[in-house]
Amino acid sequence: MNWIPYIAGAGIGVLSWFAFLVSNKAIGCSTAYTRTFGMLESLISGNHVEENPYYQKFKPEIDWEWMLVLGIFFGSFATAIITGGFALSWVPGLFEEKFGYDPILRLIFALVGGILMGIGSRWAGGCTSGHGISGTLQLAVSGWIAVIVFFISGITAAMLLYGVIW
Amino acid sequence: MIFSELHENKKAQLIIGFFIGMAFGSLLFIGGVTKYDVIIGQLLLTDFTVIKIMLTAVVVGMIGVYAMKSKGVVELHPKPGSFGSTVLGGIIFGAGFAVLGYCPGTVAGAVGGGSLDALFGGVFGILIGAGIFAWIYPSIYEKILARGEFKTETIPEALHLNSRIVVIVFLVFILSVLAGLEYFGL
Image (cartoon, rainbow over the protein chains, first blue to last red):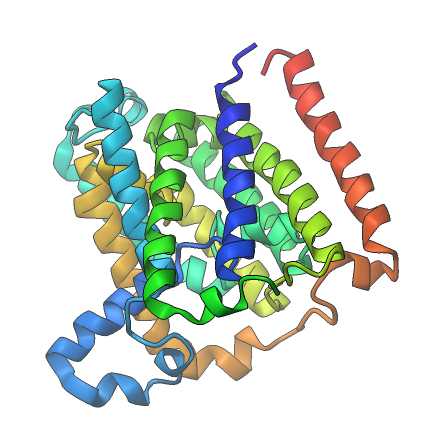
């Protein structure tokens, strides 16, 4: 039995206690992207951004969740370096097996997937962490429905893409 | 709440957010979910790492958060939802999940691990997508997002049950699923 997923999962569960206790927050990641885009947009178009009702709800500023996402990058980077698992790569193994070693094709996929994910996570009001972990552990109706739909849609799309079905 | 003063300290909160993020990123990397192959493996049902990590986090998180809530130490933050928002958004999210192979949290961890596709495709893509959503939000709010709002925020409220009972039922259910995955060697 491989204990690593259970240890990592339990650690994330404990982190969620700290988030609730010390910060009065649930862990989530996707609003940080909206805020970042808003900050970039306001650099270009000035105060125009503030007129958008979505940015009134999620102000284009650096907040707790934004720092959390930044922390994920540094935490993963430090762990990768320490464990010797850091490796620069353009094309992941499974992608290469199916579509060949083509960095440009992989970037197009990643960009299109990222755009869908950016729209979808904000449309659904959360992502795999905000709904999938924080929402479900709070027994939120929205969290359980979201995570079930994420996986049904994700499994269907992946199986179509990889030719498992059809 | 005992940490009310700390909750109001904005600078301290930014630092705390960063350190919780560091620990989160480290755990995501150790767990393997910063890797495209592991996430796609889950969606192709050949690798169950993602589900194991998520369900274990939910078990541990739920016990602690509901125990602290019953002592009045923390308050819950369930998100509202609707069919137009949660379900339609979830379908779009799932498609993105399969095409990108990372999610908004793990993509940052993947960049930390050296995945350049996660940086130049994933992060930029999610930023653009989040921007597009902010742009279309005013025009889809009433017509789509607000349709079919969920009447209650939490499952215990929806079922008119004591939250302790619902927590126990969910814990038994999740632990059975995990035991089943191990039993079948998945």
